[in-house]
Every structure is written in structure tokens, then in C-alpha cells.
Length: 332
Image 1 (spheres, rainbow, N blue to C red):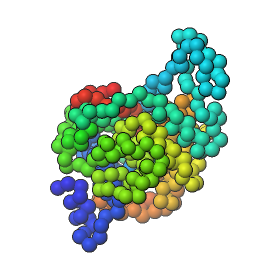
Image 2 (cartoon, rainbow, N blue to C red):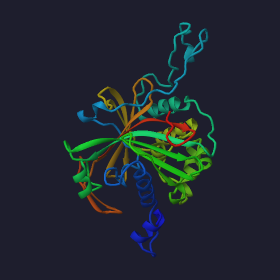
Image 3 (tube, rainbow, N blue to C red):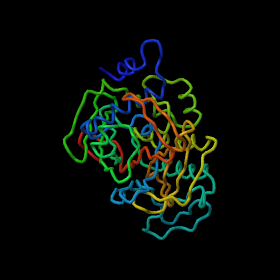
Image 4 (tube, helix red, strand yellow):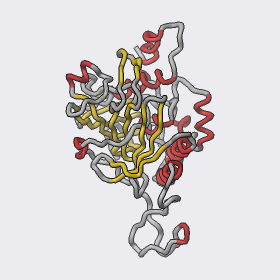
């Protein structure tokens, strides 16, 4: 049985499932490859969205994303805005568009600028998109009883997840906490074609993509960042797409997973949950993800009805590293 069969069983033949329901089912199946189902279970609603910063002390040991070759200026050249030439042999960060961003759009433009600097070579169809991340789950007994419940303070654990998805979508693999590799035939999973995603190089192209949704595609650009290894210009376009969204807020005094300062960009989703982007305040690299309920809500999921209260934390997650590799088991 594939994910479409599951959706048909849940919704029946007379009602087409929503795009959000499709995304939930798809990400749940993808995530279960990352480890044994009883331990690692995707919360089907919120982990598909851009999440945010982990604020608990328990997260202090989690690693954060390293800046990926944020480039060095060539000695003897003049930087942007007439900067003085750097000292020969000393790497310097490029000048951000906004030195002290005061609005969400400025923060996201800095993030887009940073994303666009990442080195990139178009992958071959037989290569793999590799992602290593950590996610916070309720302890096994709680998770087995209510697999999609809000996180319970003091009764959670962090899990390191690795995933490999072949560029042509024909192979999926996963590993939990450095354990055994689980490899599966990718034809059982809905996978967005690489060329389809690689063409989303501007907010306008993303709008057109969302206006004509496909079964194989994402309905939320945030999910693409969370679940895919995107070309730099596509990742930059996603941030610029969010910069155009109304009501986006910033918090310049947030903290990231290990307690260091960060800049958070908050986006309201469906009126009842806030998703946050968490950025390094110097490089504007995306480092943390969080989802928090801001209004009591009842949600239907594939495994039953979930009731959430204001203040519930739904997801705490961080991407440690990501990139293109040659085979399952390779890392970056």
C-alpha cells in the first residue's frame, strides 16, 4: 500500500484529500525511513512546515549548522559598499545587504543572500540528497500512546536522523542515531522531481508552482527547505517568497539550540500555529526550527484526532548538515 492508498482509505472515494493532507502523509512515510517506526514517528501536521528555535536547556548538546563556505573575499579587492580591502590571507564574510535588519523582509533578504553563496554543482540522477538533522520526540511510551501529541516538558528525547534520497527518486534510505541503514524502493514514495524544484528560482515561479499543485509536489515552500536539498538559488527564492508574505514578524533576541543569540522570523500558519525560522545573527544561515500553538485547535490526522492548547510546542528540529553525495551511507 502506498501513501495515496492510505489517503483514499482515510478520506473515502467521494472527497479528494487536501494538499495539506497529502503533504502530511508523504512526509510521514519519508520520515519513517529514518528509523524504527515505534521510535521515530513524524508528526504529520507541523513538521512539514518551517519550524524554529529550540529554547529548552535539554537541547544544549545538539550541534548546529556550520556555515557552508560563506566565501572569502579576494585579497586586494574592494568589498561591497566601498569596504576596505581585507588583510591578505585572512578570510572575511561577504557584506550582507542589511547590516542591522529592522524588518522581517530585511532578515529574509540577508538569509537569501547567504543561501545563494553556497557552492553547488548540479547533481546526477544517480546521486543522493543527504540530510542530517535532530528532532525532539516524546519518550517512547508517550509517543506510542499519542504519536502526534504536543511535546511534554521533561519527558522528551532528541533523535539524530539521517536520510538519503536518490535524485531520480528511485531509492530512499534512512538511519537513526547512527544505527542500521534502512533502504527502500523509492517508487513507493511521492518524490518531487529534481528538475521541477530546480526551476523555482524566483518568488514568481514559486507562486506559479503553487497555483497548479501536483500530486508529486509540495504545497508549502517551507517544506521544501525542510525535506529537500535545494539548489542555492531556489533556497534564496523561498526566503524571498516568505519576505512577501503579510504579517511576518521578527525577534532579534531569540536563542538557538545551544543558547547562542539568534534572529527568529515568525510566520503564522492557518491562524493557530506559529512557525519560526531561526538564523545565525552574523551569517543569517538557517540553523533552527520550531512550531508553537498560539490558539486552541482540533486537528484531524491519519492516526486520529489531535487536540492542541495554546502554548503547546509541536516541533523542535535542527538541520545539522545537508548536501549531495554519491551513494547511501556517504555524508558531507
